[in-house]
Image 1 (spheres, rainbow, N blue to C red):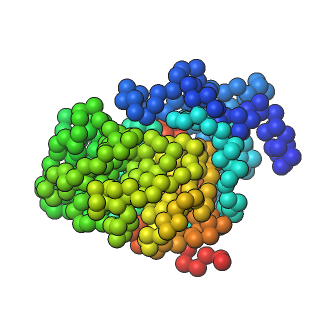
Image 2: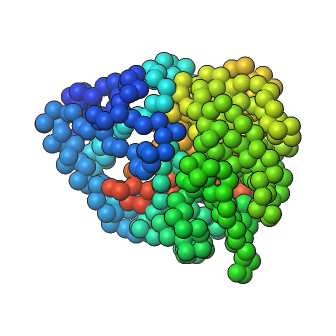
Image 3: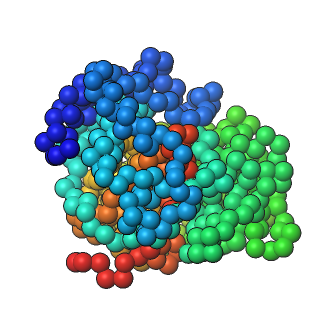
Length: 451
């Protein structure tokens, strides 16, 4: 099948790639049921799938292509040698079937359901996006493991920051039976915090691993803390807020032993993990979905169920300093560059916006994805790269400060988490999907990528 045939097949699709971004907020694209808001705690669970409306002939072609990928992977461990032989990074064989895979990925891009908290036209967002060359290679694939033991469990489709790395050898993720740690170099994984250690009915919604401590939050406004490196490490648990509240995100503070907790009730709580105590609590007018602090602790970014983010001073009770304007929908991710001059925010409007905190009136760069919301945003410790993970299939690594070059990493399935190692030498990605292969993948830094 040549390029022209592929193009003709794609043109037969009745789904316009831009028509899937509905401006009707009352319905999820491709479904007939009303779409619940994030603040509606009755709507917890996995994101619904869209229904297909392609003509029968085209659907038969896509169904045949889907058969290749909507099944268990052939390999449970994948290396670069396997990729060179014709397997992909999740253990699927597609040697000689690249065109079918491309069509299947295009179908996923056009049919993936788009959740909108605020009604908007994504075409207007795409018009603002910076032109980026996505063909650069900053990190090379090294190793991946697949199977149920590597499934990073997603409990809420909007809350995805569930993979953390404390070194190139210690990658933490949330599994159905507790918190697991994966060593990709020794090719081993084990459970370090079992579900039995946690409070009864603890349904994790947020995870943070920092300074040898696991901090988790759940759907009932509770926390769980445990020291992971000490033998028989001490643990503690208790309420952070009302039992109907949700812990949306937990992020490390610049002060050792503290984390910032984003609450669905509209609060940011500063939590001392050693004393298991909330030190202070600051209120916002909307559900807080994510917070981040600069390395100096002088600034914090707060985003949530508002189209505007906030720059605040965490030393003064999160006193508001400036607004970050430009998004058309709610934001769920934010991060500061190591030097504290840039802050990035990821939104459900499919864009990531980068602001210079010295002149935060408007974004210096608008970067858009392929399939949907930008759920995870991270700067590398070296400051050279900015990682952005979409809800499914795509992870992007942008080169700063120009953002003109990027590496696009393509998977099949929901992205549960993505992060750099602390030394920026590795990128780790967790894929969790009911149809495609559950995967944990590692990429290592290319020493001198082409300039």
